[in-house]
Image 1 (cartoon, one colour):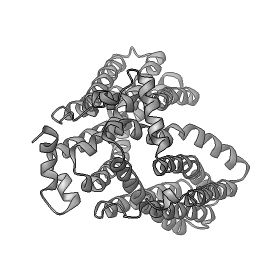
Image 2 (cartoon, rainbow, N blue to C red; image 1 turned 90 degrees about the horizontal axis):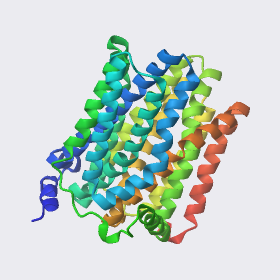
Image 3 (cartoon, rainbow, N blue to C red; image 1 turned 60 degrees about the vertical axis):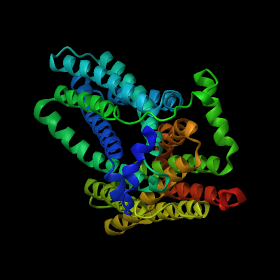
Image 4 (cartoon, rainbow, N blue to C red; image 1 turned 180 degrees about the vertical axis):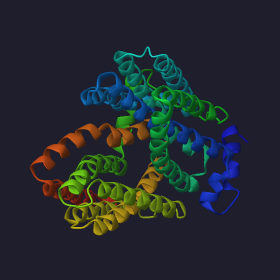
Amino acid sequence: MTAETADRTPVQATHSPMAAVFRSRPYLLLWTAQFASLMAGFFNYVAIAWLVLQLTGSTLAVGGVLAAASIPMAVLMVFGGAASDRFSPRTTMVVAGLVRGVVVAALAILTLTGAVQLWQLFAAAIVVGATSAFFVPASSSMLPRIVAPEQLHAGNALLNLSRTGAMVLGSAVAGVVVAAVGAGTALAVDAAASVLAGLLVLPLAAGAAGPATSTGSALGDIRDGVLYVWRDVPLRATLIVIAVLNLAALGAIEVGLPALAYQRLGEGAAALGAAFAAWGIGSTIGSILAGTRPVPARFGRFMLATLALIGVGLAAAGLAPTLPILVLVMVALGVVEGVATTYVISWMQQRTDPAMQGRVMSLAMLASVGLEPLALAVAGAVAARDLGLLFWASAIAIEVTALGASLSRAVRRV
């Protein structure tokens, strides 16, 4: 029995998928590592934003520091996937977590001693973004190595729940810590959580890395990953769908919802909070539902139906005349998103050659995270002209994508 097989044995010990993966020590270590990393991210966001405002009083400077983190994350994401395949996800996660922890710890010391300067915040933000570009795809490609294929949907469902939980808990706790004891302490928590995230995966089996498929250079490895996806029509179509959803749905939700609450709903900011809370609740429900059932046999048709439902949901959100109706729509959208995210990631992991896992997952995340700045900029420009047009244009773009994908026999037969 190999180390990798031994790691998977506990996962298969029970018939309940979600209970099975959560009783697996390797999976629990990965789940905790991801949760720690996500919590570190929210502590970093709140602490850095507040610290920049204290130093400069400029919202422009806040945006600049945040961009300094997001740009290297997007640019280096594919390099992170290639590193995961070449050196193993475990090694990549450990190195990324420790490097980030050391850099943020130094920044915490500078902040606590009152010596921090703006350029140091920019430099640290670049490192944080770069390490995230390596840690995130590695964590996704680690999952198939420690759970059985039929348990991937349950494992991804629980990882989705960790993201939702960290989003709610991380922001709230970080805000309290910054307000009570300052940004320096919050950065120290960030550093400790980052190091913990790296150390937690040390006991996991490295598994078979991908040097056998390596061309000898990082750019060559990335090229091989792109060609691998391009030659697989259903996989290629899935990445295109993810990219369109990011450009259309993300802009409508993150830009359109605040504008909708401000312009149309009398509850104002409370309406915005309720809408996002409804989305989170729906996503949690969807993740749990997906975790209890395997990936649909006719995945291609499922993906097309999901895409169509999201388009309809966005149009309905744009038309919502009252807060209760908007909340119902957002819950429904969240359920669909939670189910779809769990199943799509699981299907991609099952379909992908283990030696290509990191690169394929990094391309999927690039299609999602990497296009976010463009999506928000376009959405802002459209909403400034006509808020209703933003929601309708987003819905139409998604429906046209679903229709185009449905014309492919390869996609329909998946």
